[in-house]
Image (cartoon, rainbow, N blue to C red; front, side, top):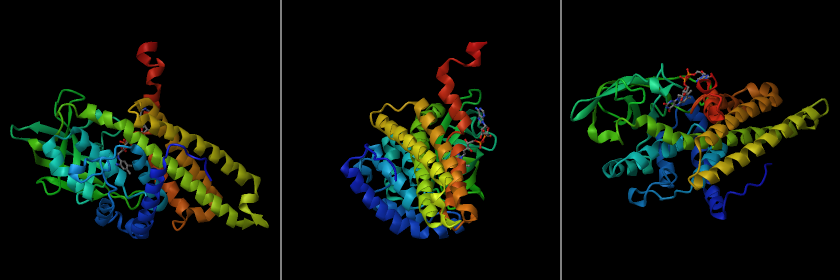
Length: 387
Ligand SMILES: Cc1cc2nc3c(=O)[nH]c(=O)nc-3n(C[C@H](O)[C@H](O)[C@H](O)COP(=O)(O)OP(=O)(O)OC[C@H]3O[C@@H](n4cnc5c(N)ncnc54)[C@H](O)[C@@H]3O)c2cc1C
């Protein structure tokens, strides 16, 4: 039960049907095993690649479909969350990291890397965060020194999604020591000497997603593995953030909708005091409040997708959507879990995972507080202006 959405054309719905069948048949049956092993199988990427679901935007000469329409990506994210496994980060691979190659890579780099990414033969990650530099990205310590024919990379990263699985990692490192924003983006490949993976970190949720530390000790990165201008990495990172936050918003709104749907089914079945739980006014009112909020959030997200299709997505609106939807996803999961009682605390009920998985949405891709800073930038309330 949700309001009718108007942004999709019939061809998106046909695509959705195929994607749903794929996630149900090829992804969902493995999810429990993946949660136990702490990561998805590499084959998941290969299978998605076979279907043409990876890097949809990539040019046909690299094996892609050349589809720029973001709505197809939106459909894949929604169907994966509902019918596949949220820890299968195909959107991180395709849409958060892949574009660094598509938009910043030169022809040689695109020809060298994109075909394997499209096939799912090589898996991607992006490494920006360090133990002392998360929200404050520009304070990163990992550094790359220009040694003439190569860059020498030293430092460490943490909380890196796909950290164990990744074959190719886009690593942000300081290239200009005395400039806060003097950062470059480097392509580090599996097997490069001095590139080591650290602990596979144990998390409270997202159990099938491998999140890791990465270490770089005197890694010689060839000059041909620099993305764009080695002093403009910070600018590039911020350029990609608006879309990253929109992708997150699609994900979080779907997570909220999923929790709501699971709960509607549950309250119809669960009986107490001689009647279904759903017949209590408290249950109906809780679900009604959340229904109204999820519908409003979905309209907002779909509107921003339309703006994005027209090349007009702004950083502050993307931040608003990220703030609103990540907070809503967690609130919905929490309130819905409450209606499951003790069952909601048991891992065998999916609502428990909606709750634990949702907790991080308010932290990564920019914490809620950082979103509030971005949104309020244009208010004229900056202390430098007020004092
Ligand atoms: C599961 C998971 C996966 C991740 N995947 C990746 C990945 O693939 N690649 C990658 O590079 N990073 C990744 N991250 C890192 C993530 O982006 C950071 O955790 C996030 O940016 C926050 O940084 P931090 O953890 O250092 O928190 P801190 O920066 O220490 O912030 C702690 C808290 O301080 C508050 N705060 C922060 N800034 C402000 C402010 N300006 N005003 C007021 N309060 C503030 C907020 O409450 C925030 O939650 C991942 C993290 C997790 C948990």
